[in-house]
Length: 398
Ligand code: C5P
Image (cartoon, rainbow, N blue to C red; front, side, top):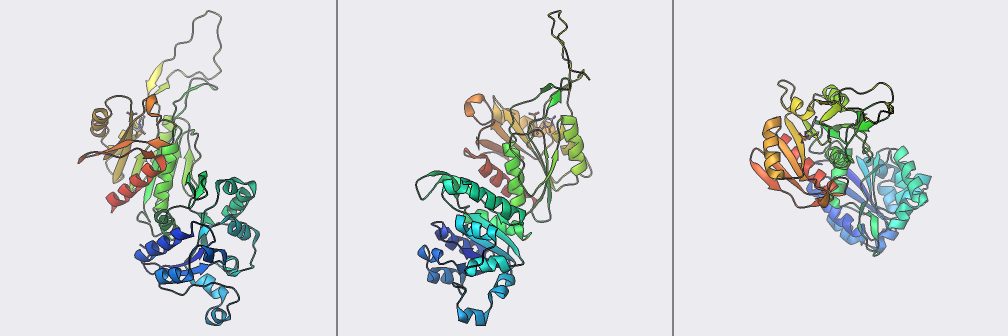
């Protein structure tokens, strides 16, 4: 909730400005007070009257409005808020912010504020991908500016790709996270992610095809709900999200140690594809062909089951322990049995047969198995699965 929090909302001039009206409603529903600022370009997309009506507050429109200066100077306005939100943050507005310009009310407020700033970028995909925008975004991140989105999808201009403004609900989550007010504020969640690499010798290893995408998305979604997240990741293809504490490991044994070191936690989500076996007789030197034509025999030893060991620990067990079950046959039966065998509270089950394209792909189709039974979720993006799971975790931790 955002009771009593004050948001200075700067609405930039882009087609996504219409979503800012919904954003105002959602922020107010959660108890925030919204002071809206419209750039001149924004007034081409939404009217001051509708913005003011929804905000239930005065709309600030122009730097040189003498009445406003008398009522409340721009310095004061920029500091009276708990958080400054720029939505939509156009390419132009982001460039001005990165360059420190102050030639209208919005940019002056952004330069004068001593509060954190959250941008929700929205622009054409080419503009988003332009090196100038990448540079500006990197500069803003260095300056401590937070970002929500953009999302990928079909755009108003008819093109497809990243650049769509984040949905109002996502921006509200980012606002809550920035203000430490999300439903998971004060909670610590441990997430494992990615594959593990089990050495055969110093240069070779046994691994699997996990990209780490689902685990990274879960860590980001939990962070967005305000949790402090410890992400313990094997060598994944997908980079860890910003704003979470990352511990990089290679082997299952290292992952177990890192998980133990990260506890205590309120919840733990084991999304890693941990190798079941390691090479028991891993060589200290690179193995060579000996000319006999006989390949070396690799002796395997079973790895510790990280999920089961945490789920079965007595004192200090996280209140909610969530495992994954990647199966290729009889998904439901195997996953239901796995929940009991491992002693975890929930299992997120999915079918990773090659035909589904899930392993390494952008989408996932999961079934959530709890003590109450099985619940099939429709196929959706891994980010959406992560957000839904994070919301369920927030609900369970209360
Ligand atoms: O037994 P299986 O590998 O199918 O179990 C999958 C679940 O157990 C996942 O949540 C995975 O992260 C976890 N796991 C683990 N340590 C292992 C093997 C699996 O934490 N050694």
